[in-house]
Structure formats: structure tokens, C-alpha cells
Amino acid sequence: MSEQDRLAQVREGVDVVDSAGNRVGTVKEVRGGDPDAVTSAGQDQGGGGIVDTFAGALFDRDIHEQARERLIRSGYVQIDAAGLFPGDRFAAADEVDRVEGDTVHLTVDADSLVG
Image (cartoon, rainbow, N blue to C red; front, side, top):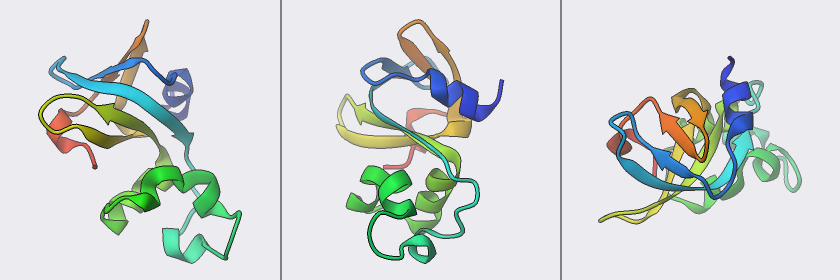
């Protein structure tokens, strides 16, 4: 199954667990990727372009540009994180291992997520 197929199975509101099985939070938003995006700044031609379509909440956050561009290209899951450090975290499409029932399983630990 491709990364985009796995991403298409993710639904808002379901639980997310990391590679160790620890709960990270719940899915807040899912965005498909644009593999042809060159850079986030280079694609922004003012209104309605790739930034509005694919970047979503990424530009409202202090996320390193390289990580932001990776998420735009691959697609991502925005996670409303739980625990000691609440807030949003982002998992790239290639970090989604599988979706079982109402749970998204990641291939990485929670500390590796962007956010």
C-alpha cells in the first residue's frame, strides 16, 4: 500500500500512537501532498496557490522550512497532541505505518514528530 493510500485511510478525530504504542493525541487534520512542489516560498504566488491548498496550518507555526517543504510534498497528519507538551504535531505521510480501526499507528516515536 502506498503512502498516499495509507494517508487516505486516516480520519479526523481518531487516536494516534507512536512506534512504541504510546498515545500521541488525536487527528486534527489530514492533507494530501503535492510531490511537484519545489519550495513553499517559491510556490506562493499570492492567494489560492499551493500554500493555501496544501500548507494549511503549517505556515501558522514556527516549523523549519525544510520540514515544512517535506510535509507539503508528502502530505501530513496534523495531530492535536496530548500529554505534558500539548499542542500540534505533524506526521509526514511516510511516517504513517497503518490505520487499524480508530487508531493511526506511526513508524516513529512522538519525539521525532515536527511541531
